[in-house]
Image (cartoon, rainbow, N blue to C red; front, side, top):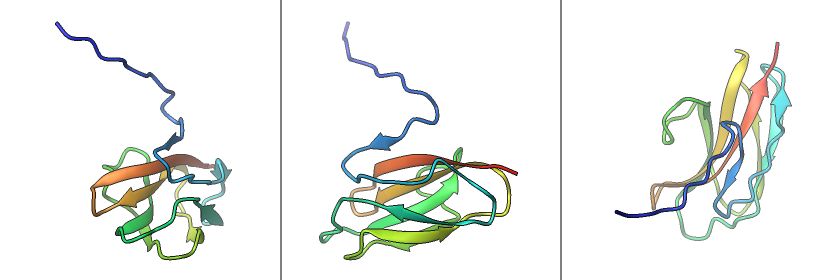
Length: 105
């Protein structure tokens, strides 16, 4: 037998693996929001992506390549619902941060 710790989080809990991703928790459909992060891009191929909350990690509605900047603006979809902003490292195929954003009517 083996043992391994397991952490249970709420479905909308932000997850941060060093990205320092900051996103508003709620917005209206079609709004433009500012998303910021604290991690540096370095030599990695990194992206900030917006996806439906239930979409696979490396799919998105819109995506922004991360360079030297530490923030970007994202135009939100016109449909209400649960969405997720993800900070992706394409080189290592890892998610360095994720935060939920709820679009109300």
